Length: 157
Image (cartoon, rainbow, N blue to C red):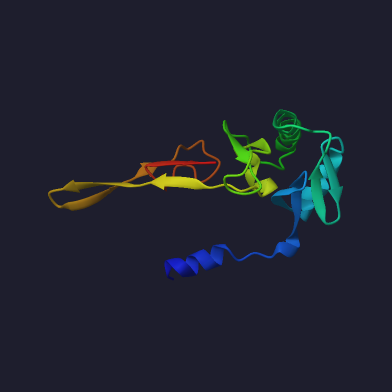
């Protein structure tokens, strides 16, 4: 399999299984229908419609949106719907480089289908017998791939 084949494979998705998540007029992400239905429990925060989910217009600024959604996410973590929280927030943007609409705990990013990206750094060492790749190992307490080999340094938003 070529690298391009892999890119095509992981970018194959059926948008019929999702509905847009909007903050004001902006599409901030895409949520699965089942997740959208779970958000109906929080009518003060989300307006759930058959074809979309809107963050309540009452939440007029980044701080109010961030706090309200964080409270919902905490409940969803307790219910086992969202994996455990991480100790970092990602900015929620309608487009790369656009204004921050709110912030969301990294653990909930996949559930809300927001724009996220990362940077990964790999290193190598030249030794007498040739080049050696410098490989890190993930903590055993990580949600994703605990204890597995990993990049030297990585980060995202």
